[in-house]
Length: 276
Image (cartoon, rainbow, N blue to C red; front, side, top):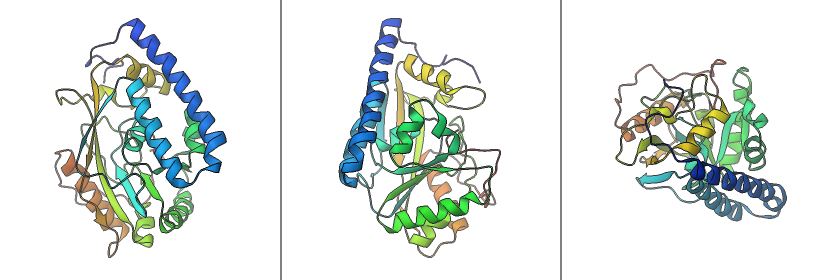
């Protein structure tokens, strides 16, 4: 894959500089909010502010959101939201419509500013190199879902270039089975305004986080399509059948082949990480 975002027009220097300044200020305000105001707010207030902040982030970066399907609401109770994973922007794109608490790889906690921001916003971090850590996260997920939270997972366990959906890992679906949750599949697609897929927008391979941010800042005409599928009831499923049903729903949403037999993975693979 090309090291530069050649598939999209590039913004001029004044536009890029303006976006950088606004982005840094926006990140600073977000960090102050989650550090000093979130502790005093209830979940409804946090969700409303998170949605607004995430939508503003995408606007600052010049990214348009195109929505299809029926979102489940701002912060739907006992909902397990799952999506294919393309970019670090996926979290903010999803939160601009339906706010969730996310499960992400532990390395994200160390990212400058973003790591502190998502940690203080309630993100759960998982060590993908430790198979036992999935048990710990599952217990937290199941408890949070029962208490009425909306939790989100990227079941591929790593990012793809957006042209395909990788096999879903079934391990964290156990929490949705335990809690009898509603599973909400979502397809994410990065494209031009005419709908043409832009795999260069993906955060994959040897691209660093800063390089990816620079690409997004420089891009003109980038859209994120958020495609909500019909929800799936977790009752009566095993984690494997639930993961397979969710994977097929995401594939259908993205107009990809739904032939996924024997692709669901039961145990996290240490070579792959949620969030990258």
